[in-house]
Length: 426
Image 1 (cartoon, rainbow, N blue to C red):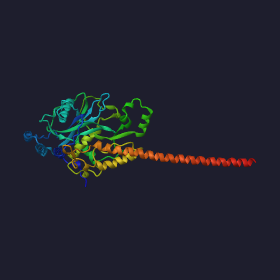
Image 2 (cartoon, rainbow, N blue to C red):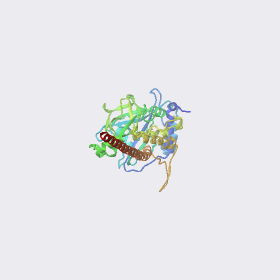
Image 3 (tube, helix red, strand yellow):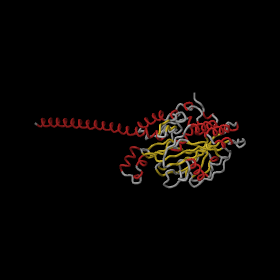
Image 4 (cartoon, one colour):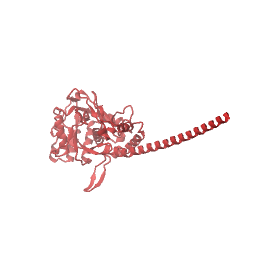
């Protein structure tokens, strides 16, 4: 029996999220190139309803995970917050030449500086610089914990960088006004209901409700040849095509948005081509940011995943698809593997990977969304190429053999016709 998750109070999602952030170890990937982002959640009540005050006394004294759960649970169990609606803060990055993230939708954050003491400090500093929001102020925000590190891969090349997501809860009705910097085009508070709707209505690849962002494979594998576009490059581009990354549409309203400039619908003229990532009513979330949001949703779900929808896998599903006609076999393998390898019950919090490392057991280093995907693609794509080449070779052999037989037959008929003509002349 399915559960209508939109009927569950939003405070229950946040309470479950806090419990899992404290009890489930996050995956931490070592990399010299690091960045951090802040996922900020707030609860919204009508103006005529009082907003309760959180009591941080126990947590301020102990600073333990157990005390954090106790304090947040007591705050969220207040009957005044039962009808509250949760919202998550997203930003659209400003458009700059040669910036691969121009106009993208994501979370406030950026690269880690050598002076930053930790990934959490990076997220807080970048949020302060981009939005003028002080996440370290305990009267406004409470740090809940960190999600799994999200790795940036470039198709068939090794990992390029690691992004560390950190979760914060706004514990007051009205935080200080945001002052967005030149790095940000706009900021949007998006209702959690839009995310729940995407969970209840999963999309299938290339269906009417499926939305994707195509990433040119040739330009990603051979960026140096993109300007000149030699013949072999264009041939490879036509054959291989693009990877279609799933997009989650998030509706936003002017009341919950801050726009720095009226020209906020930016486009990125780089490896994504000329692509818009927002409209006047919607944000197009994809890639790393969508993967991070998916991890947050996994840890916040207060019911078993199969009760949400029989077809539900994740809000970041399906995996990126290749061109639907020429590479239908690869997409078939990807989608079948996706339902098995990326099943909700093979992810946190239902499944926590345990490995034996040099320093002892390593708990929680689960494979991430894109690592699992590329591991499957690195097998499925070459096998498809080999099978296509074998079939093409076999058909070519048949065509050549048939052509030779046809030529021989024509020669025999021509020879017989010539003999008959000579006999007629005699």
